[in-house]
Image 1 (tube, helix red, strand yellow):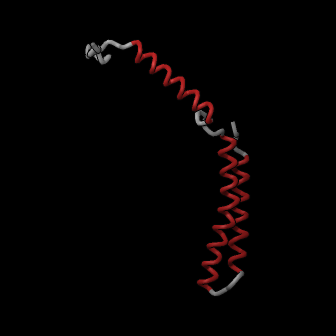
Image 2 (cartoon, one colour):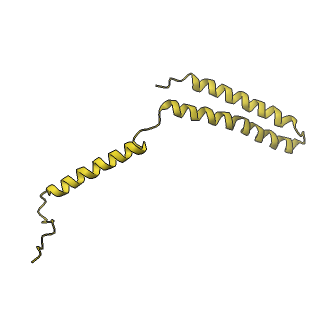
Image 3 (cartoon, rainbow, N blue to C red):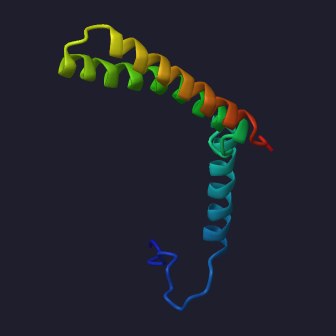
Length: 105
């Protein structure tokens, strides 16, 4: 006849089988994290690179957008667009210089 022992006796004792399974699961999760590369946080140098890229895109684009809005408002077709875009480029370069002076560690 089959045993009615479900492995859960309810008295709080740890089961060696469950402990072994838990250790195997932890090892498998750690191996998967190492294999997929998700166990590491991005390096500060990579974060700085992303900040530089953001500045290079957002500075001129933001300046051009603001210049285009002022051109539409004051009817000075390409003048304010160009001025604000070059101001955006200058601000972006200034911010990039600030970022490059930070220590990457």
